[in-house]
Amino acid sequence: MSKEKGQGRDITGNKYNRLTAIKFSHFGESKYKSRYWLFKCDCGKEKAIGKEYVTGGYTKSCGCLFLEVKTTHGSTRNRTLTGAYLSWQSLKRRCLNKHEVVYQNYGARGIKVCNRWKKSFANFLEDMGERPSREYQLDRINNNGNYEPNNCKWSTKKEQANNRRTTILINYNGETKCLMDWCKKYDLAYSTMCYRRRVNPEWSLEQEILHKQSLTYHILYIIGAVNPYKQRN
View 1 (tube, helix red, strand yellow):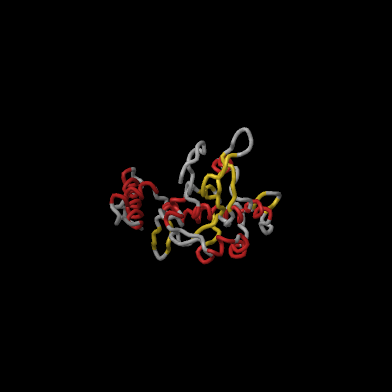
View 2 (view 1 turned 90 degrees about the horizontal axis):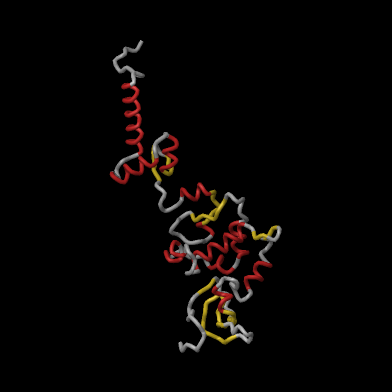
């Protein structure tokens, strides 16, 4: 596009919250000559807004966000947005806003928000209900799946940590736990176990347990706490 003198940095195509810059519009009438750009909101409406207000994060929509906050279907308490509404906003930013810090872990990976939730907080609230407490966060059952009713649940921070892509899950004696939980159960050094698995990917939990038992017995033998030659009565 042709650049008008004094319009400043070209932000065409950039998205800020709900607003995408289309083109430079005009200069303001005040003595400061603010630069106004035409933005298209996620709701579809186009509006000329001062560039500094949008890029600075002061204006986030054409006005529809304000109306949504006023009509959040009972999801405000003492003038504070509830957990469910904040979670709904957050999941959309992660998947739809390329300028969001964590976008690379969500939207860039192909994680999407289902149309039912993308368009309506009421639908999200109907499917998920209110967040049980501050200890819970919205969690995807399949970390490679989308944000949709059959793939989301409210989880505690510990449950959510166990569901991360980097979490090591181990099945032992017919029970599946994350490696850290197994280490706590058998009093194993988590960092040592991780190191041994990096050196030898085949190193198993059972081997680590037997190794510790053998090492413990050896130490007890050295200090004289056990005598392998002592006859049992």
